[in-house]
Image (tube, rainbow, N blue to C red; front, side, top):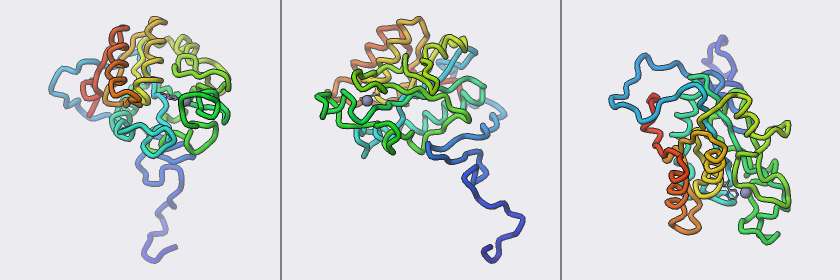
Amino acid sequence: MPAGQPESQPARNNRDWMGDGYSFTSHGAILTRPPEPPAMNPNLLMPAVTLKAGDALLVIDVQRDFMPGGALGIQEGQLIIPPLNRVITAFLRQRLPVLYSRDWHPADHCSFQAQGGPWPPHCVQNSTGAAFDARLDLAPKPLIFSKGQHRAEDQYSAFLAEDEGGQPLSATLRRQGLRRLFVAGLATDYCVSNTALDLRRAGYGVIVLTDACRAVNLDPDDERLALRRMAGAGATLVATTDLGIYP
Ligand code: VGL
Ligand code: ZN
């Protein structure tokens, strides 16, 4: 024991080592104790959207390979983390579900250039690049849905991504009586837009959190076109700063 350290002080450990409600695991920071709600919502303006029963948050592919420096790094991808974590906290505080998708490819996936596909190898199952970004808050028992798992087909939409038991996201939405999905993550012009369009086709309300998404932009217009397409399909585009959450 270092000199001067009181004996009663609990040792730091991987569970909540700073006593701030977060613990750290191999797949990121886990919020073990949702923060206390503020005494009063200090929003001065009427929020554009407030949370209600039947809402869920779908966090799409916030994985290391999609962050700057990753195998398929997306410019400014790191900037989605702070607003996204604020929304995750708000959903958990209101006991609303937070669902996570991940791109989860076999090493010889058809979307990889070696197989004639458009992308460099990325999000290979169980690789470090496929892990969730360490700065992303995970729900205490995160529901994780994997997509692109089959060698011969790519899957940009998370709508049919599968949980550990092989059950599709669509089944969880139905079973939990969810009606409106808030979507955010990476990438606006691929997974986010394909997921949002599938959700709209299936009759779900969709709110795209614009400041918590970033696009690959192979063509510089792709983000704008994806947002327009989602809006055209009836999705609502809102910045997290216009949600009725604190702060
Ligand atoms: C994605 C490119 C390749 C995505 C997945 O999830 O948006 N983009 N694989
Ligand atoms: Zn992929």
